[in-house]
Amino acid sequence: MKIEKAEHSAKTQIISSNCDVMISFRLDGVIFHWNAVAENIFGYPAIEAIGRNISIVFPINYFKDPQAFISATAEKSTEYETVCKTKEGDRINLLFHVFPVNSETETLQGISLIAKDITDTKIAEEKQAILSSIVSSSDDAIISKNLKGIITSWNKAATDIFGYSEEEAIGQNISIIIPSESKVEEELIIESIRKGEKIDHFETFRVAKDGTEKLVSLTVSPVKNRKGEIIGASKILRDLTEKDNDDERQATLAAIVTSSDDAIISKTLDGIITSWNHSATLMFGYTPEEAIGKHISFIIPKDRMHEETNIIQNIRQGNKIEHFETIRLAKNGSERQISLTISPIRNSRGKIIGASKIARDISLRIEAENKQKFYTQRLMDLNIYKDEFMVMASHELKTPLTVILASLQILKQMMEDDSRVDFISKTINQVNKLNELIYKLFDVSKIHAGKLKFELSHFDMKNLVEAIIDQTSKSTTHSLIFKCYGDNFAVYADEERIVQVVVNIIGNAIKYSPKQGEVLIELRKESKNITVNVYDKGIGIPQSDLENIFQRFYRVSGSASSFAGSGIGLYLSAEIVKYHKGKIWAESTIGEGSVFHFTIPTAD
Image 1 (tube, one colour):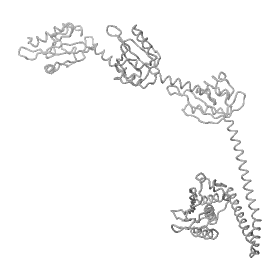
Image 2 (cartoon, rainbow, N blue to C red):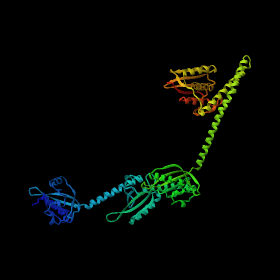
Image 3 (cartoon, rainbow, N blue to C red):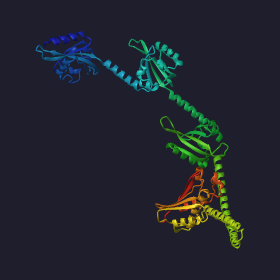
Image 4 (tube, helix red, strand yellow):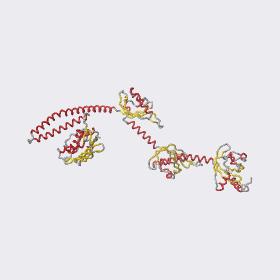
């Protein structure tokens, strides 16, 4: 085959690059030139290669369209990279250029190629990529620097630990993260590196961008160039700050366990005691040496052994047991009433390996509770005696008071023209008040005993309120104003008891507004309730007293305490309203007056 000028030019380049693979083959892929470098790299002698298809070393059909390779090369100098195989079956990476082999008539007859074995380079690149990935993804800070201390590389973990970005750190002296008092450390490290020595797991402190100190474990290795010359150092820094915090927390927990007033005991899932604090010794009498290694059952009464089985079952399931009250035995045989809180103990993998118990001595609390129960029962008994006495006293007082009142009324009639009849009238008035108080006390006793009787009937609430206002107006100088909103005020209730409520509230409004002559009484029909509102412009009630005024025997503090009263009326009113499934409440402003409200359901 005749070779044209282009082929001659190609050969000239091939010959000049005698360190590279030089191969020529026809368009059908049959090799016609194979140099010594090709022999060395692929393992085929020229005599074995020439005349065979290029596919013996290149991937099958790689050059099935030679014209495409030549066209691409004509447009620009193109490099190709592929994986070839040797005679022994090994794979190698080749980087190559192609040149046309033309006939005398400028017809493409074949291809020549110059190739370099880049297998070592590819392996090095892969290793570099792997190393870069490791450095990039490492949780440890990996930093390199030259022998002058100038930072040349800085990974993501270094940014996370010290706060400086890669752009901020590279080019800076390593001293930016070294505390001033530790500068001498860096000089010693550089001195060791110059000698080719490696420094392993050196614990020291470094400083983050925000000034916080970091406890780190430092490993420093020399960095060498291709000639083996030491040109710098690589540093791996592991942040031990969390470990240091863990140590502190562990020490704190240990101090808490040691100083706790509660007995703190740990055990395996088989019930073998593994720790026993000072309070456990005080509570049960056994020293740690006597307790550790023994089964927990030695402090459990025989009739309570089933509790331990249940406890272990719950712990194995990961359940916590809180405030379980039980009895345990001390060394001297005495019983200890305790409250137990038991939690699972897990290892670093989350597996449950035991249980921790906190035992609190509740003997004093139980004793106090028993005393409280005794005194509560005693008070209840006394209260019953008191109520019985009040019923008896009220009953016994009513008869003589009735006789006294009747006698005074007769005497008043006999002395109708006598100037001293006013004294009789005043006495009758006070007897009526005393009689009213006795009836109230009698009602209080019945309410407390649950024996207050109610006689329910249908009546009109409007008529009832109007009658009370008309009757009250005759015995007071106050002006009672009545306003009614709505119609049909029929209720089903105890009329006498509702009268008692209305009279009491209006009476209070009059009593606590002595300098004001007006009391407003409103009656409203709202949905299924009837509401009575009584407004006065009196002295008012302190906010601190409003919540308590409906309690039995409660007396309002301040200026209101100067007014006579038993603290029974509002309590009785509240109980009566409550019985009728209504509500009663009050609003007040000191110096401006009060308004009392109560509701009862309608009859429909």
